Length: 296
Image 1 (cartoon, rainbow, N blue to C red):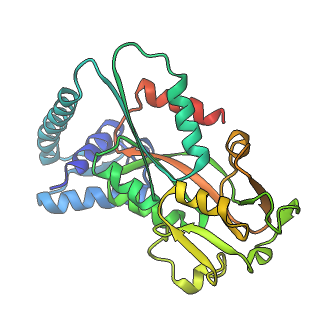
Image 2: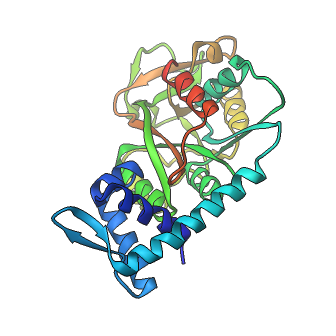
């Protein structure tokens, strides 16, 4: 029995509406409806019924919800006890993106905190960001994806009981050396980059995309696959024929690196989502991070 479904049922009872509960839980109405149906099939009875007053618990559902609230309360109490003490903790998993790394570093540096504090920051692929939050190894995650992959990632979030909210969106640009043959152009097209080597992360593939579909966006003839942001940057700095697709980077990251960014028509867009487990309420530190991200 999935205790995340207990949280869902409690929220449906509180709001009296599947639609409103889904909004509050940052998930789609069909996904929440399916979760409630799965819960009812597991229990062997209907938890809710539709009435002119909205969605209300059945008699057996009321009894179940009494126990569900106790169980969820005990889980929350256990989590608070495990994190009790004088040390404040903040953990986040982010994609290997220079703009986000700079924003998170700036956020940590700008804080004025009393007492001990521990920050835990993981840079990894988007799929592993989801797993890190779902497994509760990290409280927050930032998921970066292309709009055409949004449905896949939203399904993954729903399946793992995670909520999300939008952060930002933008366009990818080409990152290359200042003496790259294309560096003197103000704007590029994907075809301009075809003769050159693309540096990319080797574990950023979205599982459902077939190679034939991905080839329309990325040139696969000359690629160097790496697994760390430092390696990717070193490859770009040492190879005047290489380039990488990245979000716009802060000027301070480019200054002194010997790298430049060029806008690329048709390079594609990205969007960032802040993810956490369903029902999680942002802490003071979490809210401060959102403020930092919105100002960058």
